Image (tube, rainbow, N blue to C red; front, side, top):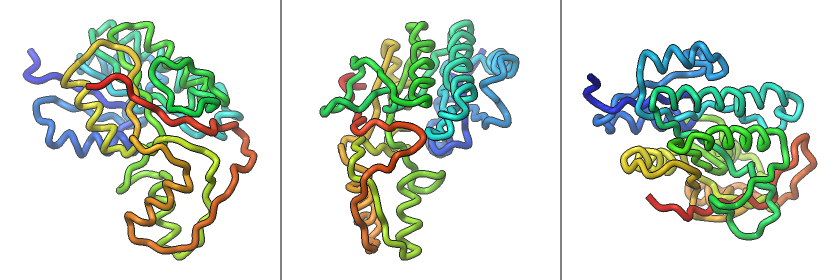
Length: 262
């Protein structure tokens, strides 16, 4: 018999995984198991099945993902393997073990043609291979009504990982002048904010389906960069730029709105 509900976290070395590890220290009513990609490769069906058999988790938070948006255009098969095929198997194994899967997804499942934040009911229409692979992954998870898809956007941790927030701080501290795009708008979301949401989701265990969790401020990367400089009390020249053509198309507006409250 298990004394406490068991939570399995995949992709534990990522920025959200590390934030969840810090939060878990205070969440002693659960038994936590964190697995990095080296310890649990979700693209290995055998590894997934073995871990689920061993742990019999009550919840699995899947933070493992292929996230290189530009590279996904060239590595389509790899992106789809991690973000769709592996997720389908993970969702199926979770169901077999009566585990509730909490799968992290992205604002990039949308095309950016709206001018108001996307809700859980809006229909995905991704522009790039990364977004397409994540949208397919969502569909696979939602075949199991007890599972959750949690979409987030512009994720950043202040203290670890490679992200926009830390890049701006690093460049500003080095005295670099900044040029930041002002024609992509979204919802910057801290990993702390998302981790709190995931813990509430586990605590309350509402019905399965799609949930949005994103920062409340809708802004451009340029506006976000100015907020970061203000918060860190850093002063360097900063100018607005326009999005340059990259390998992958990006939505110009991908802010998320949460209509479901916990």
